[in-house]
Every structure is written in C-alpha cells, then in structure tokens.
Amino acid sequence: MVKPKAYVNKEICLSCGGCVSVCPQNAIQLKNMIAFVNASKCNSCQICVNTCPVAAISLKEV
Image (tube, rainbow, N blue to C red):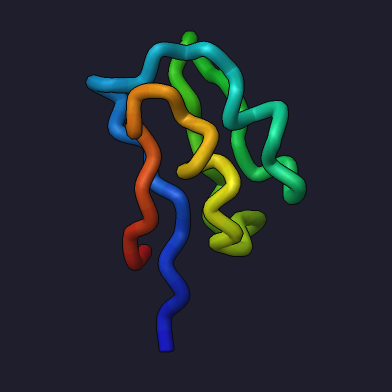
C-alpha cells in the first residue's frame, strides 16, 4: 500500500515557511521561495497540512 505524502501547490504557496518550521521530519525546505517536500522523509503526519494558512499543502499518493 502506498502511503500519501505532503504535496505543495506552488501556485498557492505564500513562502511563509510555517510548514518548514513545524515538520518533525525536516522533510520540507524553501527553495526559490517555494516549499518543496522530500517525499522520502515525509511520514504523512499532516502537521504541515494543518499549519498552512492558505491550504497549499495536501496529501497525495506519490
């Protein structure tokens, strides 16, 4: 079974960095002012999903 991973909609992302600071796996980084998720580090905890002020992050099967 494939576990969903965090996905950032780059068109909505505000580059606020909130997701970066709350990710317990350090799976999210800001690159060129856009949040990127390292899927191999993401454990699908959804903390970033619940933190994003504009709902730019969702879980998707990778």
